[in-house]
Length: 269
Ligand SMILES: [Ca+2]
Ligand SMILES: [Ca+2]
Image 1 (cartoon, helix red, strand yellow):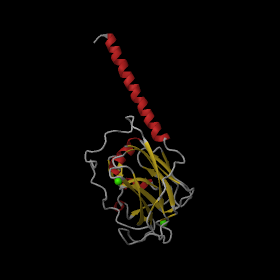
Image 2: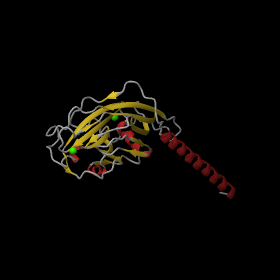
Image 3: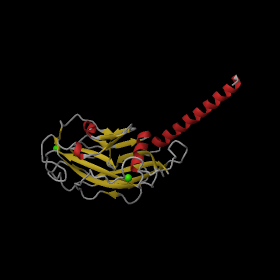
Image 4: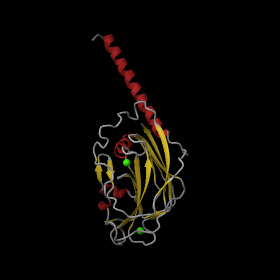
């Protein structure tokens, strides 16, 4: 190879690399600046049923692995596909009663022990086979109170919680974390001083502390949301589940004020 051929080859490589960097930059901008502060919301908010305590360890999802059956599109968020945005309203009503102790996998009251949870699920929709590029969860009201702690799941994967010190109890599936009540029930804890947890390299993780008014705004992007999307977006729906937990306070625990939030999906199809 002559020197001039080498130079040509090198400059082609440089052009290719800068094009790639440009594409990636565009993708990031699309992913994270694509979230508008007040996105349009589709009519017909999805609402949780009355609070219920159900078996949250049963798998509704297909088995882990290549759940797409080899039919998934190969396009990604970085290949120039048009990234679409869809915002849906999710309403988790105030539970009608506090914890149901000694029922459905909950244990009996014990102070400072994770004994019970109430589960509420609201379904969001996404086109079958959509590839998730970003996701934002934002509460609409300025105040949110919950007692004692909460965990928030997309299908069976925990993506948020208010007490990060509990995160390590759960099994991991690559970078994803599998929700499983059995892993934390009867765990002793000291209240106060804990921090919220947001899955992956969340671009923002504003979660209000327990029993204090506040709103949350969480944005997920990059490879983590892509990995999550591969697990949860193959069937055209995503079940968002809010688990609110308690220890021993009747009338207070497993409760929260109405959580009126939006989820914004950024995806390619
Ligand atoms: Ca799903
Ligand atoms: Ca409590």
